Amino acid sequence: MRLRSPFWGAALMALLLALYIVLVGQRAVAFIATGLPIGIAIGVALAVFAVIGALLLVLEFRFGLRITRLGARLEREHGTPADVVPLRPSGRPDRAAADELFPQYKAEVEAAPDDWRAWFRLGVVYDAAGDRKRARAAMRTALAHARG
Image (cartoon, rainbow, N blue to C red; front, side, top):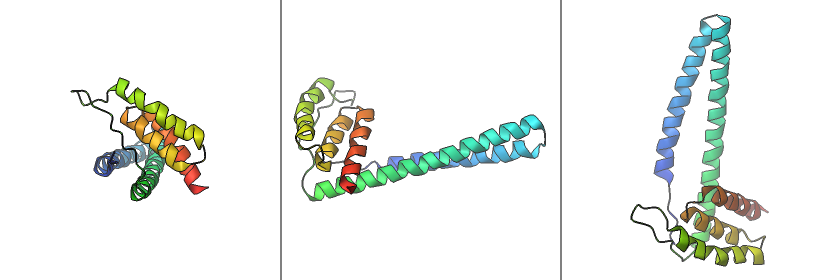
């Protein structure tokens, strides 16, 4: 299975989010500039939201870049999953077919729990099946083992 690069979609979403953060920041300054206690309170709250949004954006991009590098490394080693999860006509993965693949990749992880490659492949299969939460958890584990 060839790993797809979601770079351009992520870049567009990041750009839109950055624009939104700037607009929220401008509104925060405008509210604070009113000098009214309620305006100042709203402005401070908006500023906090803008800072949190910027931090989350940076963390999310950092995670994405690290996963992309790890995926490229696995591709160079020819270790990406060969299985393909069939798609329904709607474009969504066939859940039953994906469920059939999990035992194989889960067994790899259980056999070698410290192998980042096994965790990465499990994350790819989870992602292909549309289970983003488990895919991210497996990818985080892969990152942790790849560092150590």
